[in-house]
Image 1 (spheres, rainbow, N blue to C red):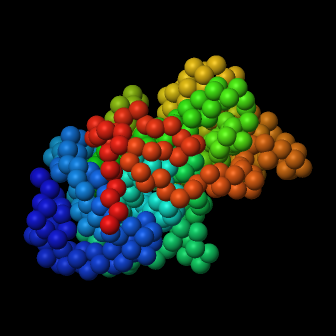
Image 2: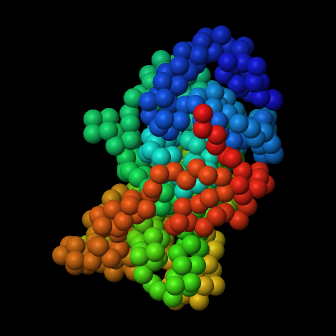
Image 3: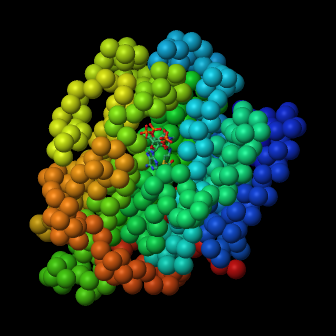
Length: 472
Ligand code: BYC
């Protein structure tokens, strides 16, 4: 069904046929806009931003680019098309038709997953609220705004499910999604990484590279859900997510490029004296964001994850392409875990290890981005390689949280960790330095801050000096 943009809430779910639901969502809409004004990109209400808006919920439905004031962005409810023959692909309900309504016994489980997913979306907008003030170019400014609008849309996707399928509890949860705030000591966001700060653009690019990719893997697992409206919501969200990871990957690459160009030109490692970000600092930021994002996959041994799978509410990454019985009660999985102060390899029941399996899929995805970043360094003839730290490094969630582990995977005493931490994680001094580079936003079309290279091409093939944001 095509997207109906004539409605107050654009949608492709025939919202006007359900007046109660439509009214409930129309009541939530102004509360969302108030939240956007208070917690969304600061001081931007009047900017005209060159944004893309979905014109159809199919993979090729992105053609629409144009100037939009962000509070007028057409946030709405877009689900990927329905497959009338879809069946649950795994667990106890394998082979049965997917559910169009929430089965009573799965109500609280599904609500909890939808709330957890929904909570991350506005959280990331809150984390990025001030970045526009220090944007390195109009191109980058437009990109952060595009991401913020789409995260707002993802919030709409989850709020629709809560309102449409979870009655009064769902409506209350939808309210709470606007009341918890990133980093709020009294009402924090649910997951750890979403209460961290995103104070500078290196952090932003690392966040969109590492943390948005957790989004990709979690959404892909929820897209396998037997609850079809959730599956269809996530399928469309995944299409939006790809651009966010591109912004992260290309953003870090452009910083690395600029650093290497300056190192080569001035024949020095000391790029800080030239106002750029040294590779060692980039590595420390990478270590931080990677480890914090690994925590988002939950405990290695999780009965929650096993239950989600068995009940058919959350599958594995690309479940239907995996060649096994999709029940897993007789399967095992080999994984590293902590035991008696050491990292040991164990064979465990596959069902209990589903979080860890998804974490493996996620880690494997990194080979491409890192290769591209390292190619830039190699082409400059510089002997340095950016590396992912060991999965047990700097963990707060799961078995490794009790260990102190170096980026190479060596378990050490607390005292040794403390003595070396400054080499591995951003120090207060690193953060102060990176913050010091974040000058006032660069708003002249085609110009870029000194610490980042221009992108290889513009958004929607626009020229380098395109006016991506107009200030009024
Ligand atoms: N922080 O059995 P476990 C995105 C809790 S990102 C705090 O392992 P489970 C995006 C856990 O809640 C994708 N608490 O849990 C990216 C549980 O609590 P209870 C977001 C944590 O359920 C960028 C207890 O520890 N989507 O979209 O198997 C920008 C036991 O843990 C954390 C989802 O996460 C943590 N990191 O796994 C914008 C998908 N980890 O039961 C957006 C939905 C665990 O003891 N969520 N805990 O009270 C899930 O699938 C699961 O909730 C999790 C946790 C994978 C997160």
